[in-house]
Length: 196
Image 1 (cartoon, helix red, strand yellow):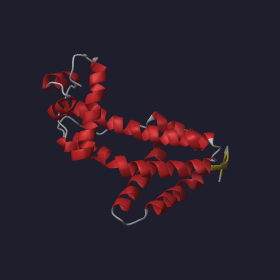
Image 2 (cartoon, helix red, strand yellow):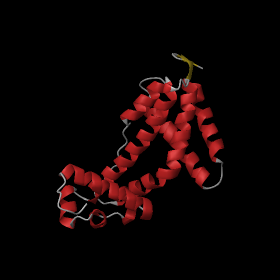
Image 3 (cartoon, helix red, strand yellow):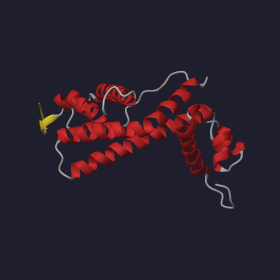
Image 4 (tube, helix red, strand yellow):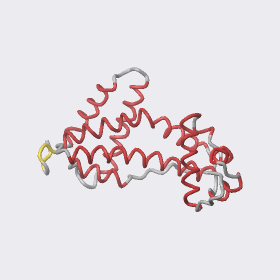
């Protein structure tokens, strides 16, 4: 990032957040510091400290970036499948496969960033919010409106635990995806507007 061109603060923040995610991916969330991120981007420590209120601020933005990457992967796969004429049941399979695949690659980064964020003294409560993307997912699948939070919690809990089981060698990836689909299949309408 060094050179004669001065970037706007928002763009610098984005580059520092991306550098933080890469450090977390390579070395774990506890390796992320404002000084390390500044060094990785070739900016001075004071600039990093000016752009972020605290390490917690940086970690929160990193966590949100990892979630945004998940959302983009899942929504992209679902939109592609929908364009190809996939049924709601087929879309559920795409959702399960994409989430599990992405979690196996990026899940460790999310977990390590979340753990580092939770370990900072400034964090009182970990927030839980339903990303707008998940409302779009439920709509694509024809799932009941108004139940996004409960369904999201159930899906993430089941999917994340299955990913842990895959990583531990307890279950094969294809079998885990099949079980996740089977768990949620009764909620997906066979025909738009009708639940099976």
